Length: 372
Image 1 (tube, helix red, strand yellow):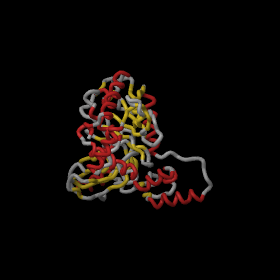
Image 2 (cartoon, one colour):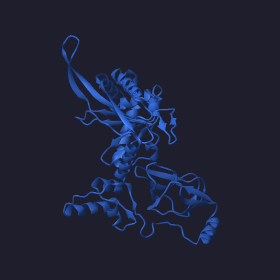
Image 3 (cartoon, one colour):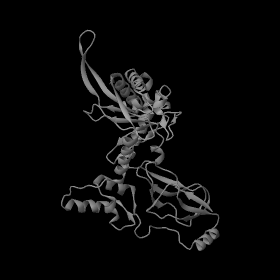
C-alpha cells in the first residue's frame, strides 16, 4: 500500500479544495498519471500517481484537504484493497458527504469572483458541484433584488489581504525612486515587436534589466530566514504582479537573465491570458526571488508596492510621462520619462545598496542595447 500525499502547492494557504478525481475510485493505475484536480486560492494543480496500483480514494470531490494529508492509497491488487476496506469498515469517500464544501468549477469560481458572489451564497445552493449556470442564476436573482451596500470578499482577495497584512507586519520597508528617460528603450521595444511579432513593452525590458543585475546585487534577490540568515539565490526568477480583473496574481519569469526580450514578452502574454481565465498552474506562481510591479495605466506616475514575504525587494514602474526640456543649444525637446520605485526590506538592504540597483537599472533602460 502506497499513500498519495498532497504536496504544498501554495505557501499562502493552509488548506485546498479537492475539486474532482480524474479517474474513478477503484481504477487500475498503470503508472505516473494525473489522478485528481486540486484548487488553491491562486491556481489549479493536477496531482499525479506515484506509480502503478489500484486507486482507493480517501478524500472525496468537493472536500477541503491540507498539505501533507494522505488523499488516497495505491494497492498492489484489488484483493489487497478489498482486505483494507473490510478492515477499515468505512467506504471510500467518492463524493462529498452532507454538509461538506461543494465542488466549484474554475469557470464558476471566476464568474462568482467577478460578480462578488460569496462562498456562503454558493454553499447555500445545496449542490455537490456548482457550475457557471448556477452562478448565473444567483447573479440574475441579485440583479432583481433590492440593491445592497454589502459585498463579501472573494477567497482570492482574502488571500491577497493576508499577504499584504503579513508584509506590513513583518517587513520594515523603505523606498527609493529614480526618474528614467525611456526614449531609447521604447524604440528598442518597437523594433523587437516588429522583428519578432511579440508584444515587447517597457515592463518586459525592465524584467530583463533587473535580472541582468542579479550577480551585482545578490541581496536584492535574497531571502531572510526565520533564524536571521540571508539566503542568496543562484539565478534571477522575476515575479510580475498582474491583475486582469479576476484578482491579483504573481506569475514568475524563471531564469529571466537567460531569456531574450521577445521570449519574456511571450511569457507575459500567456500570463495575462491565464490571469483573465484564472487557469494558472502552481509552478507558474512559485519561486520568485524579486518582484516587478507594473503600474502603467495612463497618468500613474509613482507606485509604492509591498515587499512580498520571503523576498527583499520589489521594483515598480509607472506610466510614461512626456516632458519638454531644453537641449544644450537651448532648443526645446520632448523626452519620455518613467519613475521606477524600489521598496526594500531594510533588515537586509541598506539605502546605498538600493540606490545602486536603481542606478544600474536606470542605466540599462537608458542605454538598452543589451536588453534585446
